Image (cartoon, rainbow, N blue to C red; front, side, top):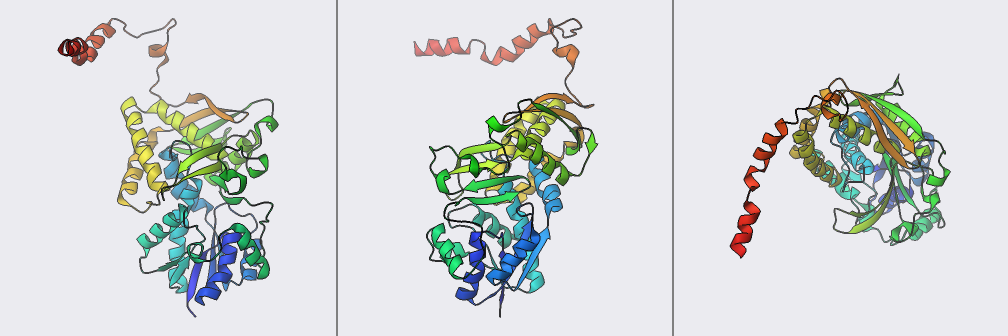
Length: 400
């Protein structure tokens, strides 16, 4: 019997997909779960997949690879889609695509399958990634084919076939979580005028439930990589997980946005990303401290493009690789430390220090010790404004 490798999350869609692939395609289903933070209990996900009918289940801990090869390039790029979303789910998909291809080749499978919807972004990210790495693999997308129109219908299907699930008709949220953040969809969240209820959030506390007193963090960077938290050296994954815990306690990293999906529709998206919000702000502040104006202003343009490439599923492309090289080129200077203040939903930079700093207090100060030559400003003003001198008056004269 031919095999299919299913990207398995353990949620409602992929649990139903195991049985559906057997019934509709007559395939042996091998479930692959990339452990990048979605589940804590590996044994539970294996048992659930087997109960659904999987031939085999592979749960691979990819958090280290995810952090070093996917999160770090995005951190250096200051990647936030449409200026807000830190791309947590989008960053995980090319990693999953890569491993689906590797597992399919190892297991001798002709097919790969996923649980993405027909109007979402993840189908694009996975399928473009798979086709980029092995165009010979056939891709099945059950949610684009099966007869279910609602999640309630899926729940009934699961119950009839005794497939274990956590979702109920009363708790209908769709959750996708990794160490860089969480995406929350469905239910009341689909009404853009209604405030997300507190029970929808997973990683962050409500602002009125956060500690009354602010907390200060010191994040140390070496060549662009965050390596110390409050003076204590720690691996990247451990730091991300610790910052999720600490910043989440202060309600940091909530995003509620109307997002422009790749397929052309607008959707209401709710995200939580405490560690991502803190580290992106800290890195951006430190880089702004050590790099020149022209570089920083131009980087913002490239950062927006980079965010689009990641969001659009174009990870394995020449432009994305070229931008990675650009963002990595200056990281040797991004060494120092940043002080962050956490206070009721906010993460504010309140201090920065680096041996590569381009900030000079004696030039910037308005107090005693100022060494800036004010007389030089006269000539600068003359030259800077020369192209525009008299332009407005001449334009007015032509209109008269």
